[in-house]
Amino acid sequence: MTRSRIADPAIFPEGLKKITWAWQRMPVLAALEDKYLEEQPLSGISVGACLHLEAKTACLLLTLKKLGAKVAVAGSNPLSTQDDVCAALVNEGVSVFSRRGMSSREYSDNLRSVLDGKPRVIIDDGADLVVLVHEERAELIPGILGGSEETTTGVKRLKAMEREGILAFPMISVNDARSKYLFDNRYGTGQSVLDGLMRATNVIIAGKVCVIVGYGWCGRGVAMRAKGLGARVAVVEVDPHRAYEALMDGCDVMNMDQAAEIGDIFLTLTGNLKVIREEHFLAMKDGAIMGNAGHFDVEIDKKGLESISTDVIDVRENVRTYLLKDGRRLNLVADGRLVNLAAGDGHPIEIMDLSFALQLESAVFIRKNSLKPGVYDVPEEIDSSVISMGLSARGIVLEKLTPWQERYLLEWRE
Image 1 (cartoon, helix red, strand yellow):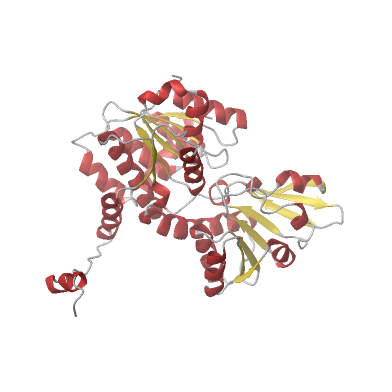
Image 2 (cartoon, rainbow, N blue to C red):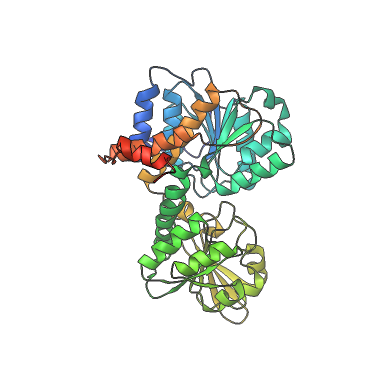
């Protein structure tokens, strides 16, 4: 297998600085390293990963290596890859295949290079690595113990494969662990999306109408933070329960046609395609700003937007302006890719400490247990352990039930 394919191996010192900064704020991952260091539970195992290649991810990959794994990784998004972090990983003995701004062909070739390492455990982000195994590298399946997936989009794809009877090995849905979606999806996405948007545009959020398309855990988090910054929040949903929840949370609820006319900022978090499209562009205000926080860059119809434009101008780093025939300007942030990672540093470090702890524990669980093909929840003992470690690292001590309180909860008599 090719050792690595990155932009510039010489810039590793800057990447190491970023990794050092992140590691100091990842106490749960550090505690798991201490727990498993002597045991070396991943000794002799090749781990193949497709993840956003930035400093927090590097901490996970290096921990996997310290616990005995041979690690190869591809970047899961061309604009979330940080070249200096990639160089640092290579310097530390991890095989890396990615560069910022890579083409779609390079992306696919990078995934293939990871699979050339014959991984026995897969850690995926969006399920592209798993799908590629099934479509092109079926000969690897007998050697794969299983893996984990950390995104809503990826879990949807895995469950579709499971329903069709195609999924050939076990995959753990890290995304559906309480220690993940309650914090990573909600607070991590909430903070990082607004951070990326503000870095890219330098506009004020207060006083603007912010349209949140999709009110899952990620949408809830972004709406909460946008309101905290003074925005008036409108939510677009297809699910009646989520729509009613948004209403009870103090948001306006409407369909996309209505929202298109009033929004100043539009943020998509649905996991679906073309949720903002031509008829919506034609109704938008001059100067409207659009950004996406879904895994794939399909939620905002970029081809449709370009087709109704007379000119396309890169006005700032990570901001592209589309000039419409009537003179209106619509602005797209980070080319419609993940705005929090393409225009920022992604989720806060302490949030990813929990998510990557779940990924690490899932890899160890897959190594130690023989599971049938399918999509599995993170075992409850792992989920509870990770969040308890997070509390402990912050010096928080929980109340304990007394024996008579425990007995009361089990009785049906008064």
